[in-house]
Image (cartoon, rainbow, N blue to C red; front, side):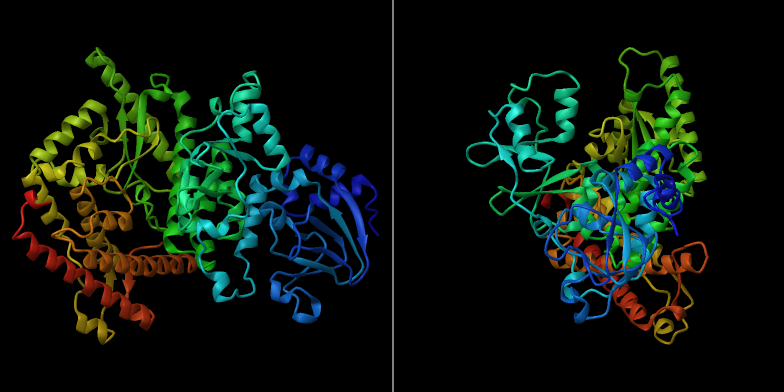
Length: 626
């Protein structure tokens, strides 16, 4: 029988079980030394996450523990146990990470010996690659089916757990830090006497802006706060908030009520109660990855699609999380390649993500489109400009090579920063955009403009979007305005033969080319026609709605159809992955579920009808009516 009082045997035990087996030896040794071995008799309640927020997580050393994960099954005589944990099993970590009630209730099914983990271990453990892998595998396991209410996507307001910790801008750094400590909070919101939020100070801010630089703690807290305050309305969907936090690398996000007052603050661990528990940890893993670790991480990103689809996460959420992870990989590859190209410095260029990644509409078959904006150097010689361009092209080629080694392919049509056409100085991009908007039929102007207005800066100056800036004024250029509308309506929504579809003789159907691209093109033009720089198709349709050519009801039809088509496409590609096939956009009509086949037919009909109405209305309008 194992003697768990012996640290050597205890170390050997945890070394043989996930996620501890992936921890460095020194971290594992510290964990064992700081942990406590405890024993419980049969039927003893070990923890009750339904009524309180426990301070510890546990590892089962011997015996069996029963877990009840839902409030209505919080006692053994109220229903069957949801999960039985045996030796090596870990429980209670979700409650610790979330910091709120919500399960599980753990009861000893036999006499058990447990390892009580120290508080520091829980957060640190799940920030490691081993912890991320463990969380992903746990999330992929089937769970007891939640009720309709439990499966409903929650809003930001529903995730808020408590009132915000606040202070006035005149408070000192010492006073703010004391208030944070007393409230056991990692942040404090700075607001004026009227309750208007001015900014936020986090633990990280205190370390970076006070402790590390020796700033006096008697200084006003307003001198070290991050402003303006990152915030979302309480009605925002949790999935959208999560993606924005990932996108902006935020650990805290304020939630505003209907009066624009701070109702509370959500942080990354709050999303452990919604899908994609490990997304923040995955981002941290990418940021620290060595070149040797990147291919494995690429495989993890690919698993986002089936794992989150099984969790019934909204498609926009699955796509958004994958897109943010891909862009994280791009940034990490740039960081690894920069030292190899001494002709370039960190601030010399901006990397743009294009296409479905920038629009946050990624599926398993998506590839990576990119462009580079080189910073202008006033007075630089032509030789110097070309030297920097050559270095940027070489860097871009190396970045895309690394991405491909990670299973993240480059655009097959050549829209990549490794080609001179997509690697220009800021002034060159501005000049090109001005030419495109004045002469939309020359030099593939509309195709290039469509690609570049989708640009999202992910490295360098994140405000730099010269082409999008020019096309914000599209309505001031009547010829280009009308021609781009016609171009947007060129890709027709169509199924080869509705009769064939109904009779199950439909053959195949390219859902991207003949259903989704028409909506994406209309949405892009609609947003540009209103001077909007929004990128996601749904947001673009909302920005361009209620116009002479795209009435609000038509925009709503396109939004609904887009959501349905996205879901059909994602399900199809995830099924292909599960079958070991390369995911594609080509559907077999005969093999589609009858409900999806009917929805597909209806959506294509609706999109085609909107296209016809827009084309008819456009004949009687000119840009001056916008």
